[in-house]
Structure formats: C-alpha cells, structure tokens
Image (tube, rainbow, N blue to C red; front, side, top):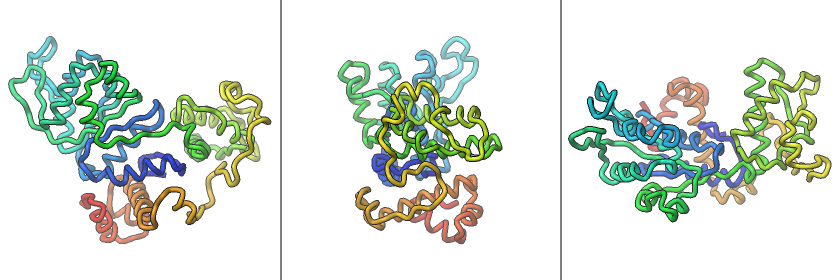
Length: 342
C-alpha cells in the first residue's frame, strides 16, 4: 500500500508506482489520466507529498465544478471593483499555492478561453488578477488530471494543442479497476476492514464464491464504486460466527452483470481473499515487475517512509519510532530522496 492510499500489487499499478517514484522529486508538469473513480487525486497528492515542495501548500481546484464565469477569479484572483460584488481584492488559487502545487482536476472541462491563461502560467510563470493592472510572478508546480481523451479533444477543437503538449510532459495513466486483477480483492478487504473498524464490528471477509463474483464484475465506477459497495456490505450484512460475505449478500446489480456465479472461473491460486499473513517477495516478482533489487528496495523503503510520516502527521521523531530507527537515520534517508528533513 502506498502512503497515498493507493492499494495494489498488479503489474499495471507497479508501473504507476515506478513513475511516481521517479517523477515526484522533480518539478516537471504531470498529466494524470484515467477513468472516473480510479484514484487520480490520491496519486496527485502522493506526487506532492514526495516532492521538494511537500512543506508548501497543495491547492486543488476542480475545473468542472466551478461555473466558467467564476473560474478565472478562483484561479487568478481579482481586484476590488473588477466586477459586481467584488467588494475587496482576493488572491486566487495560484497565489495561495506559492511555492507548492496547484492541482487542476478535470482540466478537460476548462473553457478554451481560460486555457490560454493556464498556458501563460506554464510558459512565463506569471498570472494576472481579474481587473489587475499587471502580471504577478508565481512559483508553483502544476499537475493536471482528466478522464477525457485530450488528444481527441484537441482534434475536435475543444482543447488547445499547445496547452496539451505543455501539460503532457510526464503522462501517468491510472488503469481502470477491471485491468488490475486481484487488486480488486485487496481493495475490497481493505475497505471492509476500515468500515467494520469504524462501526466497531467484527471484520467481514469475502467467501471464495463472493470473491469470484467481484473479480468477474467490470467495475464501471472503478475504485470509488467498489468502496461504496464495501461500505454498504459493512452495514447490511448480518453478524455470523464465520464473518463471511456470501454471494447472496452482494448487490443485485453485480449479480445481474456477471451471470451465474457457478459458471465463473475459479479463483487464481493464493488469491488474497483476506489480508493478514505476510507474503515474501520472490525473484519471480522482480522479473514480472522488470525491476532490479536496488530499485525494488528503494521503492519499498520510500513507501514505508511515507506511510510512517503520514501516520505521525509529519512529526519526524514519531515516524522514526514507528519505523524502529533513529531520527538521524530517518533524516538521512529523507535527504537521500531529495526531501526536506525539517
């Protein structure tokens, strides 16, 4: 599990983690793509957390949730009297993020008239408030995300080609859940554990038959849909000595989509229906992930460091205690990764 909350062991997700590990410490612009519900914001937050800007603000803005006429002011701010109801000057998200990261979520929804102003930020590192009399320099890293095919949007004339290429310096694609194999079961069990703990009830587990059904379902809503289903089950499934979720407990929507459960293929050997036992990595794992030993160990260490820091709310002494190492050792490891240690 990554400190960002992205859970998975599939090869497709391993490719994402490798990119994350390499790109995060740089200042390069990143474009994250993927279907709705795949966890794009979690990935972007992980990029910021592992960056050299991690002690500065992370400022998200959903370009599809704010009316077009208000979005420019939200992004760049406005001066007093710039428009009706502008009774005082107000800084925009780019100014608020000074030194940190601006996350432009659903950038494919942005009106083309505003896109040129985002291009200016990327090229000139400056903005101009609505009603302002001159540019302001800003120092931010821009990370964008979208569930749209921006190349197709460019072809249709809905998205500026020059902006697309400026954003697409480092593309990271999050795979849909249906392409992540047994990650579905890892995620399902993790969600069940969280929701059951929250409700102070015995932790539920998936029966092998229920697990087969979940693996066969296409998950059009991706991880978000799976999380919602697991929350529902943590509430509705009755207590039993075994604590197992049976096929009969699954939503009708899933059962209708997969057909007869007894016609589904068997579970792959050693499928992670429940969490608990530690599984040692093997040489086959390195071969499958196309990694060398050093790269594998670096990624494992980075993820454990991030998880400990998150659990300790960024307090280095506590993080070191969680990891069972000295604070000075932790600081050296953070410096080695290019992260600020204070």
